[in-house]
Image (cartoon, rainbow, N blue to C red; front, side, top):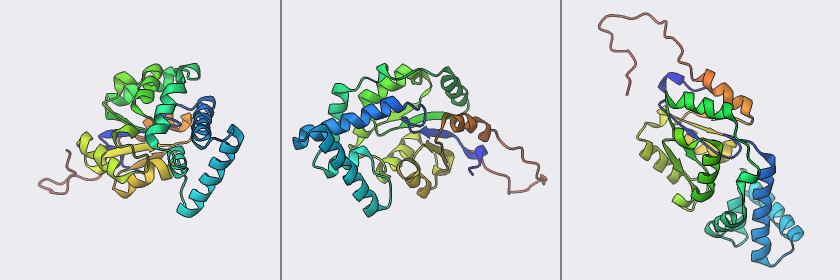
Length: 229
């Protein structure tokens, strides 16, 4: 568990974290299958089976979950090509529904913390999603896959995020729905992390970030008082 009194900034994943929409998640997966089908000159069913087998092999080899970007790259595609394909055919506005409770939660958190998004989406698609769901006005910054064209997990990108938010690792809370993809590297670099797999757990975050009063005795001249940045 993280010490809420030390947190100064929060970095959220986007899909599956700040919103959950199974229909749109399925649409993204189907778009990736269509990309591989076009690339490999396969029908949709064969491309889907090939991707499933490739994902399983990668996960067995690496011992961690594999992203769509990693699977497509393994099959000869490129991250850039996949995301240009996404931009051309995905229509998030058809599937997504703005949740005012999430917007209000983020507005409250933004009064106490600097909020950021770090997503495996590209900037064009992520911006459309963020604007449509009403998160744009509370975010201090957005980090996307086209900043480096290297998908999560990526240690260099996490370090870049920490450099740009200008906070110590122990002061930046990372929030995501996939530990291996979103949280493992930040935790290894010294960041507190919070794994969520439902909106109920997202809403619980606010109560976890309420500072716990320090009832320890204070001594005049003591040099052990916690330092604030």
